[in-house]
Image 1: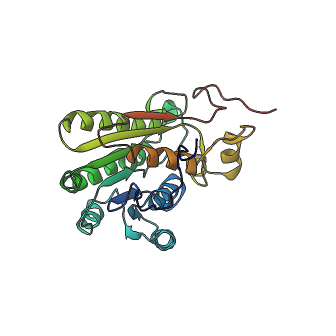
Image 2: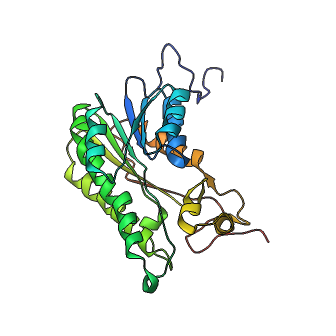
Image 3: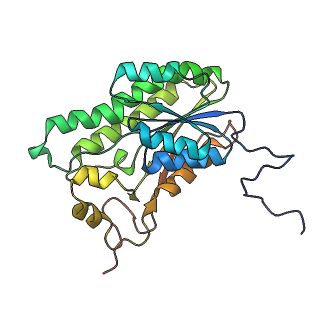
Length: 264
């Protein structure tokens, strides 16, 4: 019937403003990958987007392309986190995306400096910024804290000790914060992606382009950063009484961490 079609277009209509209109979203780790894609998608949804990361040159270019704002942010530096928080007038959505994996060693060959770095970036840095921005999220009257974890937050596998331990920490951080904020106007959401092909993640972890490419070899259509950004945008634009506690998203080819269909 005419007039019954669902409109999924981001184009504003007089009777239906964009869902992010009048709201400010902060995205960390936005200089590449999932963070950059999320910033682009949230801007398309009408959010005023503030992007944070250490590589300010990349951030500035991204912010200019989406009409957003770029601020330098090093989550491992408490003074950088404080300066970042002080520069924000309003925060409605915080997307805790910054993180990473830096080795694939078995526990018997553990590099403790790599373990410390992994925990510092993924867990302690996330705690620092969440703590700093909670007052603004409360003041918004309808805030969202999004944790981008991983399927590695829910399972363990050989060679993944430092990363899975850190992402398990992010997962329990999200669960704990949701309990502690129960009854307050702040949602706590977690997006746990599986195999996502980005320009840097596997390269940073494995150290060579050849090894990084081998992770995805033969996998038909691994997830891309845009796929995860789509999930994040969908979650934060639900009516505010709807809380997406945990969304696990994998490519069709990946049934579990251990079972991935590969073309011969």
